[in-house]
Length: 439
Image 1 (cartoon, rainbow, N blue to C red):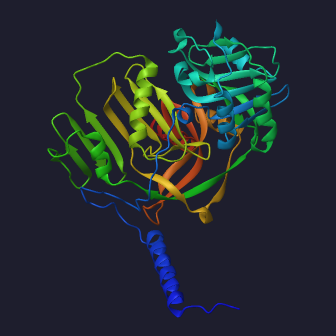
Image 2: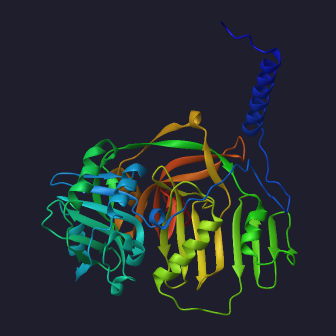
């Protein structure tokens, strides 16, 4: 027998659906501004932002290449890299057996050799932070840094850990079956790999696509925690805070530290006076910085260690989505943190995060091939020898429709003079300089 519907229940359901549709339309169609409240400063829904950063995920490789005799294939698919990282994380490698040093020419030739798997990190990582890959890493090598792991397909050959900056190669015995297990990941995910060509740049070998590549433009809702979240974490005592806020910034200070959050961008800056200048090994300082930032940054997509500046003591991390780094005119993808021992003394990152994709707004974007990219840069006065790094990345920009909507547009990003910019901006800067000089 068919059950009779309750008129009250039906009416209630219709009302709930109407409310849901109304709230969704308000978020998407009514551009808003950042709240001027000194206490919250939110721009969008503050949905539950969970923090799940682990050392194993942050100090991890970002792409893998398969070198054959004829071609080179690359993947930065998150699922592929997660599988590779997990396989290495089983700790099957023994200690380092020897260390080799090559000339730049010898080093580049070694990297581009055939019949090997290459696993690459965004930046050089101290070996201690990769100690999970080993069952007996000697302490003498804890501070040494690497950014590539080469696994020959011939399991009789050793495994090599490489440093682009020093051209040093650390030799490790090849664990039984490790090469085959990583090769199986490649074989099972060939559809995620793109044919690439290696090019020698100023700092390192770069793998650029042989043909045009298609990368989706992404659209997300922006979210951020209330400012009180950061205030409570960064100040020991919030009862004596001085309010220095103005139309541009939310700002608080006490006797030793100051916090400011720019209202229009959500960029957070923090400074703390420190009389101590504790000397610490690179891996300890970086590890301490990670333990601090994982409590503060609510980014839930992949997030990777991105550099350590020995001169300034700055540690950098970068946000990723779908395997690609995030940049922008305002660099919403970058986190900079400086430590004195276990204490944060400088910090800068975006409080804006993305968590809710608007999948119906995605659209395909076609990017030029590596050869065409280098040709256009060369014609603009930027030969390969002047270029430090090249990557496809997402350019973060808020939609003209609403500052609660983030457009992530894939573009070619070029690093020169220690600065990341889109290819178009480097070329435009060259044309401007040429016009100023009468060319």
